[in-house]
Picture 1 (cartoon, rainbow, N blue to C red):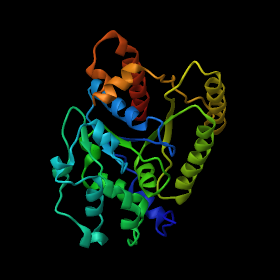
Picture 2: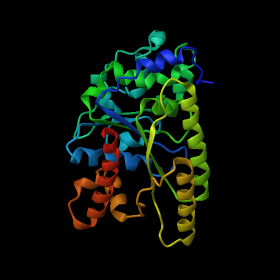
Picture 3: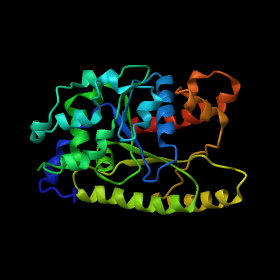
Amino acid sequence: MFFKNKSSNQSKDKFNDAPKGKVIAFLNQKGGVGKTTMCFNSAHALREKGHRVLCIDMDPQANLSLLFDVDLSETNGASIHHLMVNSVRELKSLHTPNLISDVLVKGDVDLIPACQDLSGFELTMAPINGPRQLILRRFLEKNDLLSKYDYILLDCPPTLGLLVINSVCAVDGVIVPFRPDDFSKKGLLHFYEMLEDVEDMGIVNSPKILAHIPNLVDNRRKQEELDLEEIRSVIIDKLGEDRLLEPFYNRAQLVKSQASRKSVYDYGSKEFKPLHQQFSKIADVIETLNH
């Protein structure tokens, strides 16, 4: 598969000197759990704390780009896909004239958007001989993004394919939003196995699991409470500690901000204050990577 690399020890040594910036992935192989919303608002929570933040949309569905209200005509149709392809010397015949300055969308939180072309990423990278799982990591380093930003947040697709492997190999920490149900419990076990596979590659260290976030929780359903406790047990069994944050319920305010393509911090009314506090706690957890 794409895990094998004969020069793994040499590659691992190359990445020992960690730059200042930290990279965090919002990841779950199951769709519909709110990864994009969590990534978007956590990025703005970090910005509220005064940090320089970049989001990278790694999902071909480009929902994060949509939340940022980005039209790809602003980047002449170019996205993170084109930038990663351009960063691979072996794919010179596929290179486009796009520079990172052409694709980076500046704002309170900066964004490198995605496009549908990302769905062909695995096929595009199939011919190269180098370690395909390190393409994103090397792109970040070549463009010195880790010294330009305090935090880089990745919104990952709901798969365990090459895009996710690239994301995991590029990050310092992982945040896992999930719905409290039986499917999530099984999905978490597959997720932990994938992280073990990354560690076994010997190229990079497995990232730290910073937190699990129960999302879209309906507190009227007793079964969700039971599923949540079972998932907590799985987390403690695997990690040795409870890294489960306070649940996010089906709040109308979160739906409203998402529909308006705004962060919860764009609203100052008192009904948004609990969401401010919850996302601020996620930002606090992310900041622990610097301690």
